[in-house]
Image (cartoon, rainbow, N blue to C red):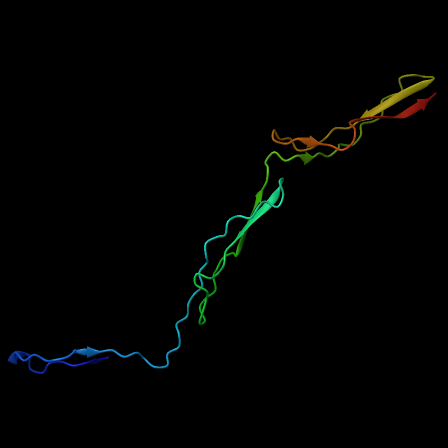
Length: 142
């Protein structure tokens, strides 16, 4: 930048032309540009109707890092559980109880034993247990 001044301001003389000039510097490298995230994408569909995962992403392009600028900080992706809160839960069987005593001392008698479904209790959970609750498969002959 060049500046010039009117040398005799007390004389009332007026100088013609600009009092300063500007000129760009030569051979400077571009300034670093730090990356910034775009807005989050919409959430993806849930991967399952029951106990799934949904995701969303964002891109480091607002602006993209350039000229040695810093990359975006933070996560590129977010995930969160999704799906129906009333999902069925498979229950787990307890151990079998002891066999009942044989009710007869001769002929054909049937003993029994049982087990219970030990799924976690929840008002919103339906219990699904594979198998039968009572088993009558032991026949005793005396």
